[in-house]
Image (tube, rainbow, N blue to C red):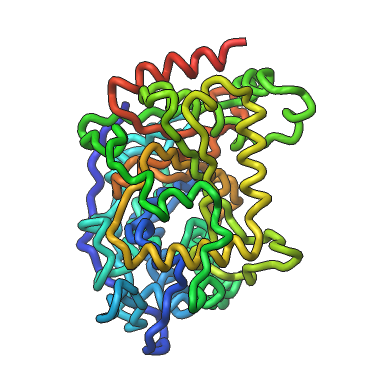
Length: 451
């Protein structure tokens, strides 16, 4: 695998190109939940057209100016988070101080990083700036962005974004706005919407309609802290990436009835199989309860006949449905049993459920932090690499959440879109496990992927 070191400029603050409002904005209670108080890391790889002669520094300078233009519309991103004196709530002081920008070069070509370009990306840390402690979000810049120009004329955008300000879709919307300005647009294609009050807890709160699998945690019944995934130190963990092309997906679908197979998404299918293999590999007892938690984006969804999210909203707009079964159920029941449970919890995401979950998250923010034992978290981020994003003539060819930056968030399995060696659309999924469990997990997956 290729190795290299990026040559970085000194970090500098990029402020909005024009004066912006100086004010304080409230976060939503989805934004301000404790698990999101970290910097999410994303890398995007861009390929320039053949024969394009790009002067050193031209790409970075153009993107830097575009960032300043985008911040006029996304001015809260140029501010800082502040903790209110009463309670544990954060607000955004829109100070216009700016975001961190680093210009870099690397003596490497896109082709040197792999063909096809898939995780794990070589030396991915070289494409990311230094955000310091990624769990410390108060009083710091909310975005750390690095643009690295490559020998072939291509470039890489790496960023750490405070998750309290934007979710993955919101980050992508902001990046598209930067691309708009870099291409000469005068206003964003999609105008940003703040409107964080749509996910604000009620007073008094009501948690009557939360997802059922959350209820044991409300009463402190499943917070023992004896999960090997929570007690194993990072240096004893191992990350692997599993590739699912058309052949592998066809094999997995052969394990379920044809009628159900047609309506089962690739994400659902892979998640159920990996959850079972992961659970068996970790050696939980047969009567212990295990859970799978997955992100559900509410953008574009009709909740009780209404659309909850306005176009342009870039705050956190995802909920985390959770399914709970015993280890014995997961190991012995047919796949259809788990698939139906996953679908039911998605269908149960009604307006009342969403309101109750927002109320619960606001209450939890005031509690002592705790971890959910024996819970497998999964996030579908295939849309990141699946969008036709261009910076001028340069086209996005790969993107994803790297195994870098905040370690705790890497306990999540991310589904990323990629091309396999035959050029077919595929899904790559990360998995992090203690080293002894990884061998067992690989054996279990091999069984599933045999005809």
